[in-house]
Length: 269
Length: 89
Figure 1 (cartoon, chains in turn green, yellow):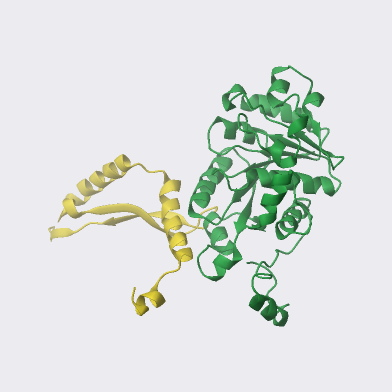
Figure 2 (figure 1 turned 135 degrees about the vertical axis):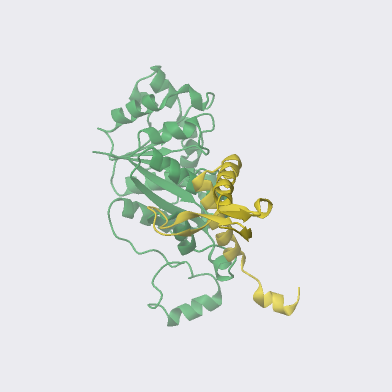
C-alpha cells in the first residue's frame, strides 16, 4: 500500500514546494517509486522547481476531466527513473475539481507508486481541501516565525478535523546565527508550541535559491539543506537519523570551540 | 535605552514565544467577542444573586493554560476578575 503524503503549511512562501521537490527526489534516489502531484491549481510551481516546465502537455485537470489518459499527464523526471510529476493546470482555478475527484485520481496512482506526494496550495480553502482529501500522512512545513507558526497551528487543527492521523513537522529556514543571539525561536520552542513529532530541521541555506534557479533539487548534495532534506527522506523510509548540529560552520570561533566539544553536543540547534 | 534596560531586555525570541502562546489559545478556542459578552453577562447575573458586584469593572478572558490536552499538553482557562462591592447574605 503506498503512502500518500500531503505537504502543507497554511502560510505561503515557507517552503512547501521546495520540500515536496526535495523529499520526492530524495525518496526516488533511495530507489522508491514516487509521483509528485502539484495540487496548486492556477499557481503551479513544482514544475519549475523540478526543472520540468518545458515538458508539460497535459495536467491534473485534464486527467480528471477525461481529456487525456493518466499516463499522458505523468512527466518523467530528468535524472531519476522512478520519479514522476503530475503538474497542476495553470489557467484554471482551485474550484474546478472536487475532493472526491482527487481521491479517485490518487486511488488510480496507488498501484504504481510507493509514495504519492501532494504539494498543497497556501490557504485553507477549496485547494487545501482537495489536496488533503486523499492523504493519509501530512508534513506541516513551518519557519520559526510568528506568522508561519500561527498558520501552521490552524492547519494542524484542520488536518485533525480531516482525520489525518499522522502529522509530522518540518522546520524550515532555521538561522543558527539568530538563535545564538536570542533573536529567533529555537527548534524546541516551535515543538513546544505546536506539539508535533519532528521530521526534520532545514537550515536557511543560499544553496536552496541556487538550486531553484537551476531547476535541480539539492537533496543529497553537499549543502547543509541538501543533507537535511535527505535525512527527512531517510526518516520517512523508517530509518533513525540523528538531527544535524547547525552550530557548526557558523563562525571561526564556533569551529574552534567545536573541536573541543565535538561529542558533547550531539544535535538540536 | 539605559544600560540596565539592555540587560533586562527580553530577547525577541522570548517575546515571539510569549505572544504566540497567548495568540494560539484564542485561535484554538475560536470564541467570538459576542459570545464572551454573553458569558460575562450570565456570570454577572448568577453572582449578583448572592453578592453585589461591580459589573463595569468586571473582566473575563480566555488565557493561561493548565492541565492536559492531546497536542500541546495544555488547555485554555477561563479567567474572570469580578470586583465585589458588598458581601450580603
